[in-house]
Amino acid sequence: MTNGAQPNAGEAPRRVGALRAMLAMMINPGRVLERHAGSIAAPWALLVSGLAFTLFFLQTALDLERVGKMASGDVAALAGKGAAMGILGVAVLAFLAWAFSLPFGGQRTAGWAVRAFGLGYSPALIYGAVGLGLNLGLKWNTAVACGVTGLLWALGPLFAALREMTGGKNGVSAVLSTLCGAAMLFAWAELSLGG
Image 1 (cartoon, rainbow, N blue to C red):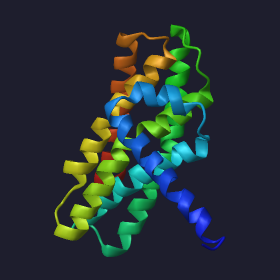
Image 2: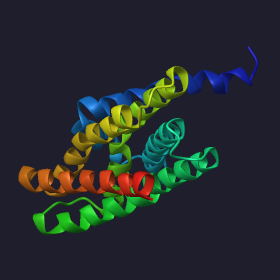
Image 3: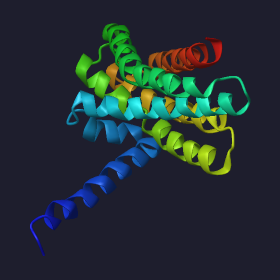
């Protein structure tokens, strides 16, 4: 065995661990946030949301191109808008949610909120990857079926993050997660369908 093969051997367990954490985010987001949100750097967490929104906007662009409502040259630009929304938009949304949660007694920092929100879009990333595969492989229009569904699945992790940020107050967390989810859906509609 050569020295070059050893680093590759360690890559597979890390990839499996990351995939397992993303899938666990759909099933038990509170536990994943408790275990991982404090230890993952914000850029890596925002990479999750950035990729999720890039795939979502790319599916939207491909759907619009397929039905003749978007030029082929505009597909990459819309995917770029998705990346910006997934990174900058999610970071701003997390900061605002953190600021609104302060009066309710939570002890989490703004940095924790950004990491938790970024990781919270793990379900959207999974749905986005599946949707893009169906879009390209079977030529299905998947932005609503997979992209919007992924954003809806992300409401569970957002609720779990907000519950941590509000000191366990379920009612406030439900209202804030609903507002955060609605803001992202409206932003998607405006950036991709309205403009």
